[in-house]
Image (cartoon, rainbow, N blue to C red; front, side):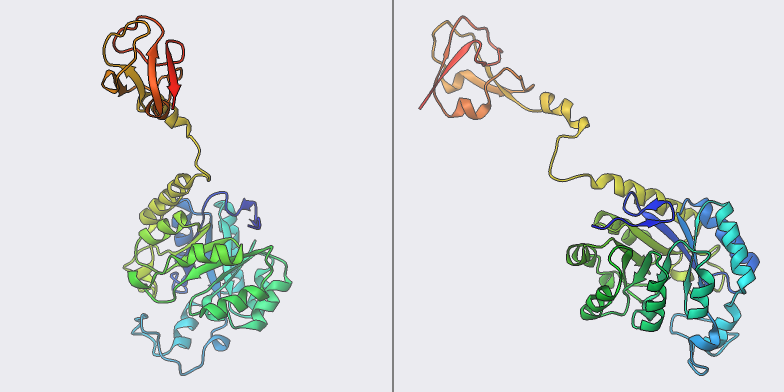
Length: 347
């Protein structure tokens, strides 16, 4: 698998966790900064926002999305208008993120946004809705930075086509289901190892479920980047509040994802340092069940297989496959049956 860096972070060294603040700031820059602080407190690697021009993003008459409730507006354009931030405000958020030692990410929804953000972000995120936006994708590719791209709304052939267009040396493909929130039966985490095998790319997970289990499980399946929506307080009227975590939950997610990463381990099977003790104490060796005289042949009933395993003793399989077991001297009961004191005759 290709090695990719986002800023100073080696993707795959541990889970790279993004707090997707998105538009949960509701267009309030003070709320945006408070949300950034809460996300940084939780231990995430990056905070992410969205930059757009509402007039060029959605048609004037498009009604609110099904999962969005906002009694103050009637259309998606009006809603996005409320949440637009200025370039100066994004710059201040970038500086704030830098001061808090978290990466600043922001999804551009147009070429002007991409041009402005190029100086601020260590990588570009492309939203699921723009996987067919070749104009934007080609522009972001030309800028030479790592690309994280979500695959929500895609057929398998569309994902194949998308991957064929993207630079393999700097792309992280994010499994994503674009339903808000995503029900369990639609999460499809099996696509993560499938994509790893199919594309040999770093694979992440842009999650829209309402709790922690799916992103944690995705790490076990090989996800190296986790994007999870984040909100300061679910009482806020953010459109993503039902699938967003608050600070205490994000803190737990970060800890659990790192813990799950530690649990993955290596292949092929090897003896872990903590197992060495058990290899001796829990495995068995053949022992004499009674006192044995010199040159006496042991009956199977004279042998017991007990713990601990003795390094000098015959293997159990050697005993079971022997025609005879003969003592070379007087042996007391409870003695390990070893080449030093016994002779095995093979069939």
